[in-house]
Image (cartoon, rainbow, N blue to C red; front, side, top):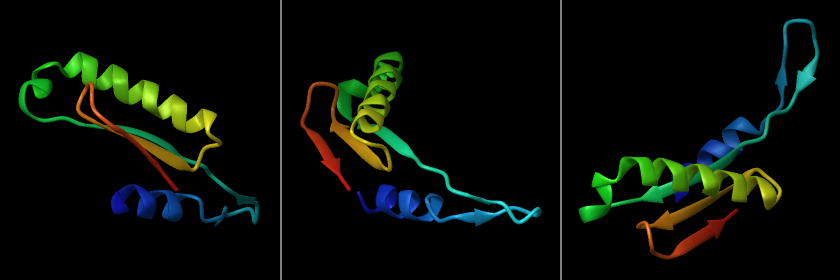
Length: 78
């Protein structure tokens, strides 16, 4: 999931505000890759993606958790 890796790296770079204050932002991503019959259960997909986002946060943030299908395999990277 190169896309998530690139987004996380871009977001976590420090930003200097107009008053000179430097801030850092973290990001946690939960994603579900759904196909076939799974795509018809959008409420379940969104709920699962939300749960996966919180799992990424529990694992320290600045990471992502992806699940392939509603009952499928889970990948945690970064």
